[in-house]
Length: 500
Image (cartoon, rainbow, N blue to C red; front, side):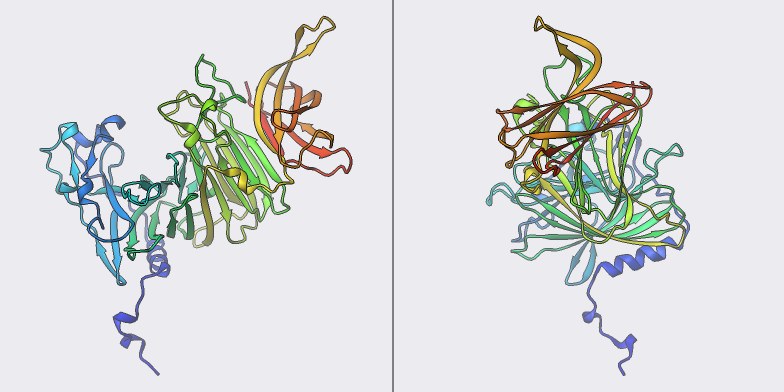
């Protein structure tokens, strides 16, 4: 029988299990708060100045190799004040990528004389020729701060962020932010069209091993495999968290006069339940912290969606919100019972990510527990392709004051509020009338009218409602059903009129 200790090094292959072993060992030790190591000149930078720190593109990692991928790095600065370790895996050997001040140009912020030799990387970027085969400097992936990362597909602009894990988001006790403290990146082969990134997660409550498989494409995908080890019990665990921004839109108009009809990276939460029910929840920027949850068993997918895709929807020549991708979380293993939770945080401007959505398992994880999970993120400008033809979508939601048309044809406000919802889908037709299934809490529905909309070849629902207690949110559900068969033919529109 072969002696295990005699197995040659060449037979060893670096894998997810190696990171999992590190995470498990780390979980058995007390958490150590990482030490900040940057001078005040960098720590005091404003975001606009931090963005002026330039990476020397001619020094891109793998830039001298004949492969599609290249790495660039983020410099420490501002609140990115703790260095992270980045390693390259070559032929199953781990080679640390060392910080070098020559990677960066600090002259735009007049810090080119700063002694930075003892600093480190704050994160990294991945470049890949996604828009043009001959253009090699398209940035497609970014990892910076905590366990945050972003990605784009063809013709997309960065929008919402994903995270490795969320802990106690929105809780009065305060949120805990796990961080990826070390990365291992496999050097790709010349014609390879995917990149494998491993990461080690650490926080006071958990450690974790992550394998991130990045596949750039028209719709870029990121497959996440994670094994989380619990140092302590966690009150609210958020799996596959997505963080976005919603300032205002037709369903939640701007309180200030603004020429832009909308400003948001996402305008709705979409959920696909195990029974194939589709749920659409338009986002708000409420005056008070708001929580919405959808209890499910083994859901199939959820995501934060940018449903409005025209320039006219935003009229913004600088930020081009119409090019921000929707991100779907496709669930690849059984998540059992739990809930999709949506947290909406009041914000006065578009610089704050005020929307968070994630899966909260019903199981309460305690110290010593282990969680294995796997899911795939889809970054797309064509979110319509995910819906079957027999499910009509709420393509627009508008908030209005309720009114009635009098005998003299003049409209009169009646004290109610109203949502105007347009449903569209290839199987909707004026020849096939529909009826509305509706419900409300914390209020009463005054009327629910449906009218064929020939412009979109769909149906418009105008639901007028009164609120019982203005200090509480009011939830309304709307579905379309066939008059002939009573079969539900639309997603479930699940709107919330925020507390005032």
